[in-house]
Length: 185
Image (cartoon, rainbow, N blue to C red):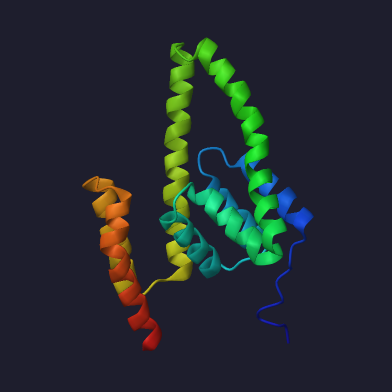
């Protein structure tokens, strides 16, 4: 008989550095999508639920959500050393690439072909974000009350353009109450 849940591997600080370096370099336009794929599916360091909770907390904290999540994942496995290694690796490589791309854009950004390429890249990035959200929702299977809170957030921020802090302040307590009720039942 096989073990249904084999033990998950625990990364070293070097593993965190290398994997977050990879995530940073391949995560064009949607680093959270790549981070989820690598951390949950490839490395199995986190479950879908753990990643969703980490990303959710990263969303409501000040600063970039990918940075917040990297710090939390690094800290989870190796404290301060991990909390430093993961984001430094995640942003180091892209920073070098971005400096080169900024130079290129400064010289050629107004060329119609370049504008078209950038528009296509933006559309692909938006699709990746939506695809990751759909994948996470399908695997986590939130109860209807929490799904309703998520949909209300989508409508408030995406359609009515309510600023994120107001969405969090308004719907955060509702989400906490719904989660509390689900956990108690």
